[in-house]
Length: 167
Ligand SMILES: Nc1nc2c(c(=O)[nH]1)N[C@H]1C(S)=C(S)[C@@H](COP(=O)(O)O)O[C@H]1N2
Ligand SMILES: [Mo]
Image (cartoon, rainbow, N blue to C red):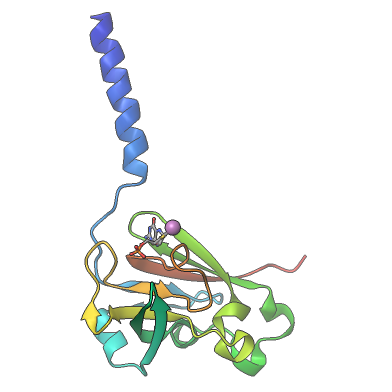
């Protein structure tokens, strides 16, 4: 009996811990919430019909091409302040991207704006002309100025723009 209780407790703890990092199936949609509360939901076909950007980088001696829509363009749809307006209070804005496995990455608004930082961060739906596999897509962010990996969030499903409250 004691052995059973110990076993059951261990199982309960194990399943609670592992559930935290479980990957939900991706609905295909990307929800973007702006700092003014405006929210837009984009389907993969919406990305196909927007102005597209393609970037090729060298990885292990090979060219890898990511293709999709500039993250900045998507944030504009949710009313984010970018371009020449990105001054003053608006600079104190951050962007959180989250995925179906609970992974999250954070950017400052300035490093997302190509006019500001010169970095063309892409919400990519294709690599080398092909759609991503399920554990990478259907969409992932590509940050050309980053080291490979960490902020290239896979299975992206949500982006939130948050302006810091005034002190
Ligand atoms: N959703 C999600 N994206 C993620 C991660 C993750 O754990 N979950 N890990 C990051 C890290 S640290 C790396 S190295 C790359 C690995 O994926 P890749 O080999 O397809 O680039 O995904 C990045 N994006
Ligand atoms: Mo990594």
